[in-house]
Image 1 (tube, rainbow, N blue to C red):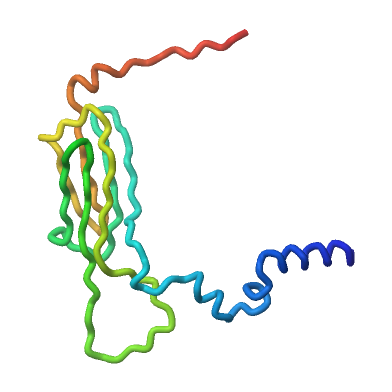
Image 2 (cartoon, helix red, strand yellow):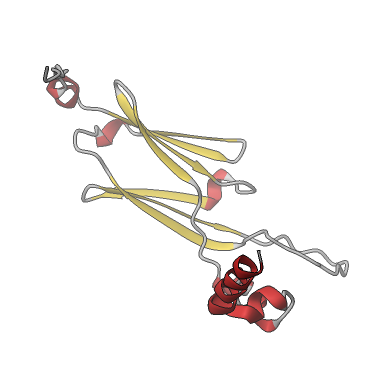
Length: 150
């Protein structure tokens, strides 16, 4: 057991003793960047359905007028800015994980999107962008049979 303990101690020593044995040291604070260093990237999903593609992006605490969507050259860009709420009263934050500032998310569009029929919906902090498929894109799909090698 002593040999195992020595090996584990050596592993942690190699990994960085200061980090594990002094958890409140300056090194731990360097793991968490200052608020100005955070890069805002909203959680986003791109899903393919039978007749459309759907992009869903989580934008809590934002209003529809704070969001800008542009499409060009086979990409869609969702950008916006989440403003910090200013209050007059003095508060001493112990931990703050809320992020404010500008964000931008650019995604490549799949081929066969009908750019003229794109629609959006923003409710409860979730943006949904619906990208209908062109009739040609719907017709190009075909099922391929999978055969097992016996």
